[in-house]
Image 1: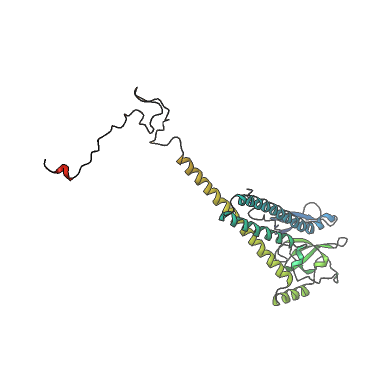
Image 2: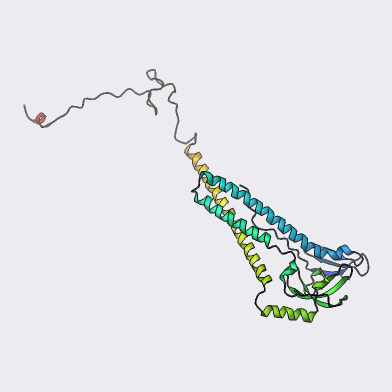
Length: 299
């Protein structure tokens, strides 16, 4: 049975780092962090589009990983159903089938609720419009792609042709490339953030929270399946060890002899008697007379 994938790989990228002046050319800024290192060149469009494409790649990788897990769970379910066809009352197999069906449904839910864009989970920029003219050095409110929340940032570079900007989050040092449409003035962004914190959860937030809950539940079920498989393997090993001890050909203190072995004496017969009595004489007949009270009376 193929082993289920335990936990989803952590594909998050840490962009924490510091801004330094690169030796390549004047005015070139390099952002180096634990997760990546990149250089923003105003002359090249590829570097400005790098940040936005990275998030799309991460979402594609996560979707592919979930699809592989789903195929693995379905293969395991088929094997369990095949085993149940010969032993339909096995409680462990029935429970495993139920767990697999639940994990498959949860994984399907995760695939169907994968967000098309990371920014869709935030209300801070739900109605962002290109009504502001931005320039390098402006303060703004931008969304950090790691958690979907908006923070204060400063514009470092602007690519008018692609409509993107390289920003650095104030107080954190994280650098990202984000569309200009997703930027807001500091005052409007703070007000929207405060308003969203005081009102009940929006539909997008509820979907995100439900998706996270289902993801944790699916991981928990997958871990349970792994534990059940380990328990069955342990029981299998124990039974094999017991079986080997019970039918061992080299048991201590016991000598096995064939019933067709040649007897040790000249009077013994081959194939007569077992358990080592071939060389023993036949049982002698003893008289079993019956006695009653008349035998005890004097004559």
